[in-house]
Length: 370
Picture: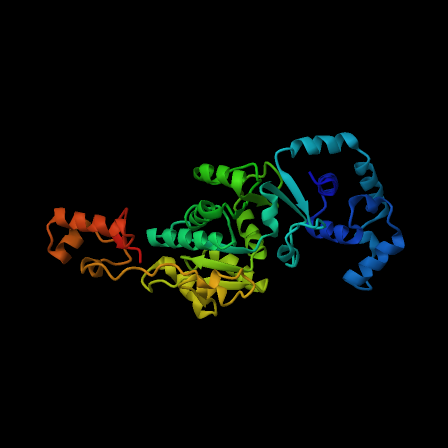
């Protein structure tokens, strides 16, 4: 456990310091114990340089606050209790050498990050893969394949461990090289969603799970859009695979643009609601992606050899039955009328197309997924 990170957390908890103020104190002092001994002139000089001539040092570090910090730092029992509470996770703070450099450069980096898993992944090259929580089968396959290929070439895949594209991306990356980072919208001691328990356990064991929220923090709705800035902030770029117009994935893409990161998107059918977000991103300037080479062209800092890695192109269009399906569900009766095939033959053909990843069965019938 990093001693300074633990002390910063102790100060934050006991004084209820907001993140922006804590970041400023970290920048001012470097080490938490300096806060109790730093001179008033030094504080004032820092405040003026950072916030302007009108700012006063008391707004950042007042004398009463300095005394309270000194009391907290001398409370060995509180420090020991906090260390015990965090015995099964690690902390990294903004002043640590291994705090991710790209993340530290965003407007509002988390001052303290809670982690479980392989800390060394913080220093790896990362690309985010995000998308729909209810993707088509093809979308899920694409997420798995791109993440697996990225991982095979030394790239750590970052996502949010949601159902759908997130989970498929983590699984693909972990299957190849156990190089994946999950950014949670709750405490790192909580698995959410519960259905991802097996993936969560695998990530803790071989990947990395992290969060800016303290242990025990429940998965509250407003925390997920906010955590997306960390997903994009840690990454060189964000790849979006299937996203509706109003979705968390587009929030991540927008934040990536604000952070001067590259945004990539897989195009999809104009008839598929799940593709409208990606298509909109492409219209707005996101890079259209069909192979890994499309990503490499925009990120020359990636490892040598990655440019030659492309995903296999899909096989030729299957038989005529596919042309009768739509990206909206059709019932078996509707398909039987369109195809004039007996129901038994129709079901057999649909089964073959489903196994090949061309169609999927849903509550309203059968629909194309690519």
